[in-house]
Length: 219
Image (cartoon, rainbow, N blue to C red; front, side, top):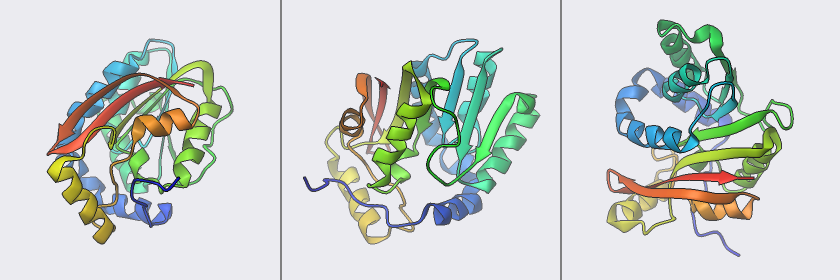
């Protein structure tokens, strides 16, 4: 059936360069996202000793929490932006956590990890950056690297709830100026279900009037 959400017509390599330029100011510009990242981490409920992968680690905000919580476990992370990786490394170094991190820079699929490696996966405000045909590929890779009893938690701009006025305006702005508004709301829970995940919990909220969904799922 025709997709009911917008495309992202930009190569991932170009997105990586864009976010590298944005990286020094990203924590300030995206400070309102942190509430929803924390909400997602609460759903993830990481436990000491687990192996967890974060897709789209950005400036390392979630990594600080994960590394501190896992103790003798391991937190791996992948992001396509060298600039974001530099900021994350700096943040983790100041927190004394860099030697326990596993940051990887990659803008390619498949994910550079073996099958059945991780207990959980976490991704916040990243899935909606992928173009429509690549989302099933990425979710398939998530299933591959997850252990059978594992879990995936995603935070995303969402069409799982009515867009509202701000959501419709933003979606229209994205369609007209994709280089400025590079992500778009996606039907998160439907996409998870269509790609082999069972949604076990989801929470809806809004950020600056834009709909956000935090969803926990199992493969």
